[in-house]
Length: 238
Image (cartoon, rainbow, N blue to C red):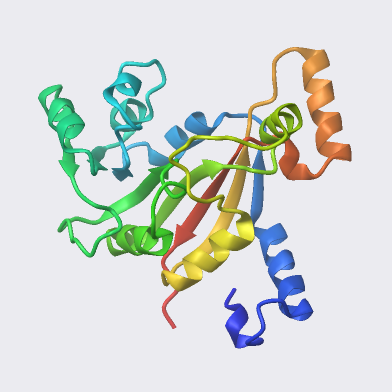
């Protein structure tokens, strides 16, 4: 949605109502898989660009569930990027196909990918629009950019806010990216927000599963999901 075609006022009630309709239509809820299980389903045998692979320090690389290891294992071809030179060098020595690059720059890798995965990066960067422009520049026709970022409206952060009186999160974060903000960042980057995914597997225990479903029924739907997974695509040709 390009709200600027309707009005020059970003608080215009008609434009805001239209944005809400679009977001509800493009919201996809997944309760049978966790985030990485869903990602694995999307990347199988495809060419994948994984942006922000180090996850802060090499300490994270050795932890179970390190995302890039999962992505590299299931993709048909995978290239990992990060701006941290020494960790990238070490990952290369471990056999990973990785490269030092600033994914908010005008650099061109000379490759196109079916999936560009940006996991918990967008809330760290100075310029999220440039990040998506970089991703779009390396996206093959028909491909998708999948951007995972924390959901500030979730139960997790609400509990922290109640406990601490304010929400002190990862000290390297500079922004929350809500669905309407994601739509606007995509617009400015020349991309379409095709979907935004809410992904959280329901627990196996019947009682816990029942409470989770009650929460989704009586609380705002996004309250039960810790992350947003935004899916951007290149705009359709006219």
